[in-house]
Image (cartoon, rainbow, N blue to C red; front, side, top):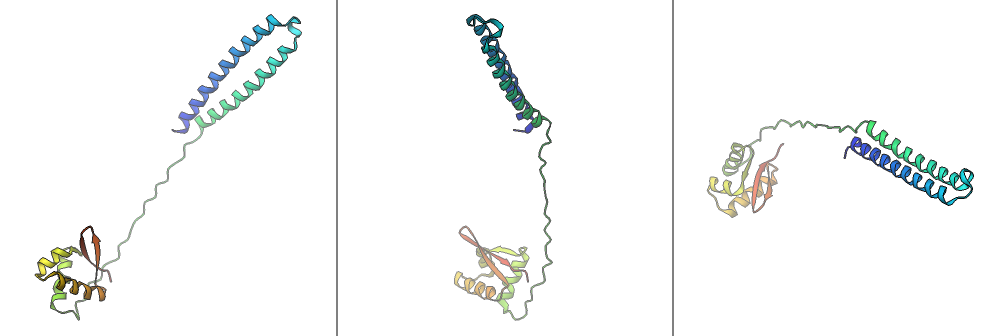
Length: 160
């Protein structure tokens, strides 16, 4: 709940408690007036006054807490946005690669830098073992990396 709502709730409780105190005080005064033979000088009247002042002081403190919550400023949420700066990707050098390695890199580049391993296998028309060996070579040269996605691998170009 918001501070203001809690403050109003506490103020309402303080009012209800003060009404209960005055009802109790009235009832106790009637009981003392009928049972005490000394009249207005009876010490029980002083006890009722003391109890009333103590309870009203407690109600006043609760009321002040409620007023503080009503008029206090809400905590502000601080929203920070972070901006990521992407490094410019350097073109991958195809020098020193054999024909099938160059084809694989070009296929990955044409798919925006990421392709499923099964799709790459179909497009290159090679088997699983051949593709695994090819990707192992390209990973050793730090040109690609394989990322596990469920039952599939995604082949992603590395940024140099």
